[in-house]
Image (cartoon, rainbow, N blue to C red; front, side, top):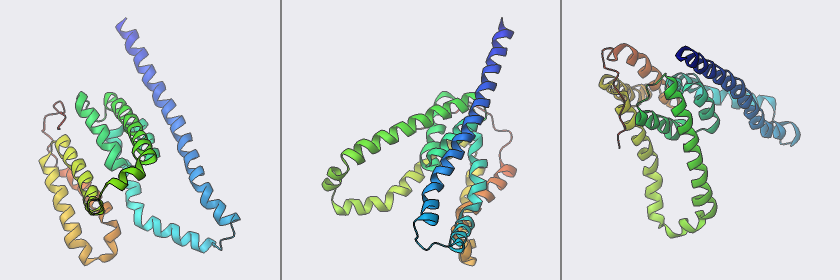
Length: 241
């Protein structure tokens, strides 16, 4: 009986992976085509004077700025999110400041270790919850109450908020990542690499300013692999408030 149940469980998980892969790819392709439909219409039918050379130049400029992240982000996020949540995350966006923290908090709450099916499913549900909260919040506090709320906030407060809101969000994400990793060596490496890139590499080579984040992530990932604590106990993760 136990073997039968185990076999059925494994079969269900395999079917889930196949379905996820099939529909995830189709959905991403459909999203790509839809996102390109508007610009393609403007280029070919709106008579705006956009030439192929201009499109190619713009594409190369964007590629030069973000090509490192195109490779680094999927490799970095996959161990935490898993295949199904990866499709969700890259479709929704705001990975680093919303979806990844949501997945990590969910996994920490139930003690799911990254790379397991338990962690994959918790990431899926966390991303669904984060997306629902985001949409509902935008609908209520922006769509319905946005203008009224802005009229109540003094201009000075809004200016200060614009300055500090992004560092506050990223700071909370960094703290959660550090606590979840439980690898002080990696934390010191990440901080050291970031400081060297920002205050040494970028001043010496200003052309790398737009690639600073990608370079920092890539170098940190490589160094962290070699200096990580291989003997650290894989204990149950804990949620940090």
